[in-house]
Amino acid sequence: MSWQPIETAPRDGTDILAFEKVGGKDRILTMRYDRMAETFVTNVHSFVAFDPTHWMPLPPPPEAAP
Image (cartoon, rainbow, N blue to C red; front, side, top):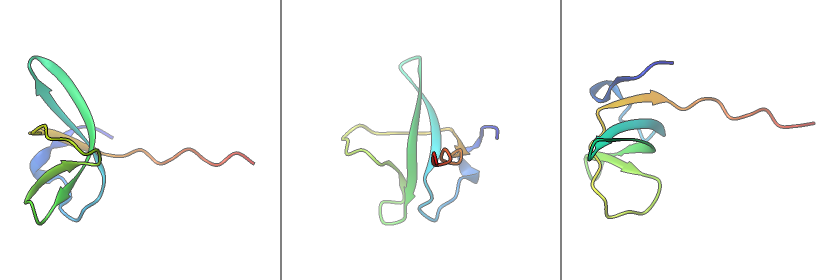
């Protein structure tokens, strides 16, 4: 997996890892595209605006322990 331009991110509501730089700091968040809002939103309720520049698929979840 490698970072890809945000323009290539899925627009079907799939959760992704998203990257943005805010105030000189890197921020990585789990996001999804919201068709109603026509923007990427976090899965956490927040009034902070996000402007991701890159994305990558989420890794698979860990295997369940027996």
